[in-house]
Amino acid sequence: KSELLTRLAEAYIKLSDNTEARILLKQALTVAQQIDNSDSKGEALTDIAEAQANLKRWGDALYTTKQCPSHNCRVESLSKVLTVYAELKNPDLKEQSNKFRI
Image 1 (cartoon, rainbow, N blue to C red):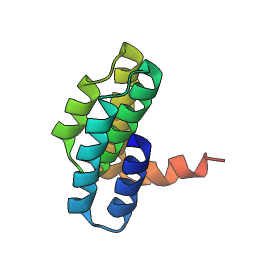
Image 2 (cartoon, helix red, strand yellow):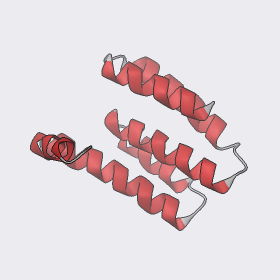
Image 3 (tube, one colour):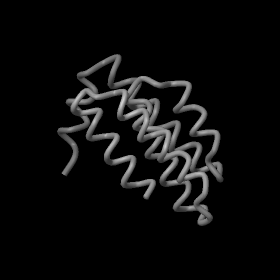
Image 4 (cartoon, rainbow, N blue to C red):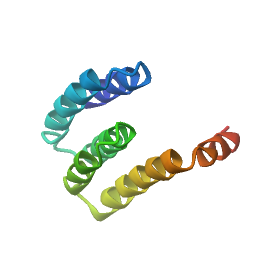
């Protein structure tokens, strides 16, 4: 359910409906916090933090990252958030990273 809410939020971001995206991400965070499996929880929280960064909700992304159940989760989450930040500051980075994706 958390993954579905996050994907819906990402779709709203692409449609520039940031209000609805924030609502869905808040719901996704609530659901993710209830996940028992550490790996699944970490994956969900990392995806949510990245989507929050795409909305420029840096405080929310940091809060979500702090909910990560492991050090690796926090590192991956911060990595994704900082990548979003760097790409927003320098759009050429995003274009370059898209060239290397298969």
